[in-house]
Amino acid sequence: MFNFSFQNPTTIHFGEGHIEKIASEIPADAKVLLLYGGGSIKANGVYDQVIAALSQHEYFEFSGIEPNPSYDTLIKALDVIETNNIDYLLAVGGGSVVDGSKFVAAAACFEGEDPWDILAKQAPVKQALPLAAVLTLPATGSESNGNSVVTRDGNKLAFSSPLVRPTFAILDPNVTLSLSSRQVANGVVDAFVHVMEQYLTYSINAKVQDRFCEGLLMTLIEEGQRVMQAENQQDLTLRANIMWSATMALNGLIGVGVPQDWSTHMIGHELTGSHGIDHARTLSIVLPAVMKVCQQEKRSKLLQYAERVWHISHGSEDEKIAAAIEHTEQFFKQMQVPIRLSDVNLGASDIDNLVQGLENHGMLKLGEHGNIDLAKSRQILETAL
Ligand code: NZQ
Ligand code: ZN
Image (cartoon, rainbow, N blue to C red; front, side, top):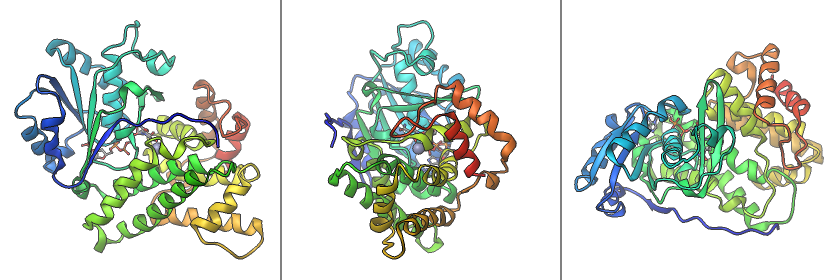
């Protein structure tokens, strides 16, 4: 195992009725900015619960943060913060609202000339407004990590800082019942791929991390398949399992001390940036191709994945690996997400532009060995046709 230091200071309040905890968690004298998206929280009652919990606080609102949050929208929140002397942010929504609020938290305290530099030049974040989250869509893990992804003119860029990790996060599985089945499926697949990218590399005999990952993968497969069946859609136990799995998938714990491979995400971001495809639906297209193209580097872990996650015990090693990839694709199909570029009407003629995007964004050495260069990314995209 590699050396590591680990701390995750986000307090998680998990379960029904916890939204009221906002009242005691946010300092009484804070001037709060409530940030949210396109209105789902007004339709499902979350907004009313949050407003009730904020009744003793002075608060302002900023809405309209869109999926794959746009820089041009987020930057407008800075005026509201300055005008009203806001000193605490409360993000209520999915990963996009939480990520967008993280950028706002950092941009509000940024001393450089242009806050876009936080993303484009990875300008250091030295200070940020405190931020908390009420999560309404389990998927990204953003509620308890320091990552943020923001889009501007087709460029989907990320930054990371411990200063924007939420101080507390409220996870009430009840609020996920209003999600469309497309968003539920997207969330399961995103979390699944987060685990895979911290697991499917090379073996260093990190048994704790490996078995945490395998447990999460099996839970996401089991509950993912169940939640797609109409009769289970209101099952709160199942929603709770999905919600906690998604948080655990990217709160830092399973990734400590092990090699990681975020190539699926980086290539996927180009598909969202250029073609507007939902984040998770880019991952379900790219991951099977990464598994195929990087089969040799990932051989021992692919075999472990085949045996422990899919219980494949027969056949040659190559047959087991092929079966594991096939099972992964079948699982994605059950989740009704695309597994090929052709499923989203993209073809060979679109690949040049995607590879150019990777080059523009400096994605030249991806993978756990840094050996996924532009040629190999092209091969991955061609394999995904
Ligand atoms: O905007 P509203 O009206 O709230 O509607 C949202 C949005 O349209 C809706 N929604 C959310 N909760 C709902 C709901 N609808 C009904 N009931 C609810 N309870 O769902 C739609 C999608 O929301 P979004 O926040 O975009 O989804 P998600 O949570 O999947 O976030 C995706 C974003 O997170 C980034 C992605 O790149 C993408 O921009 N990621 C962030 C990561 C991180 N911070 O660590 C890691 C991930 O890999 C990912 O890159
Ligand atoms: Zn993701």
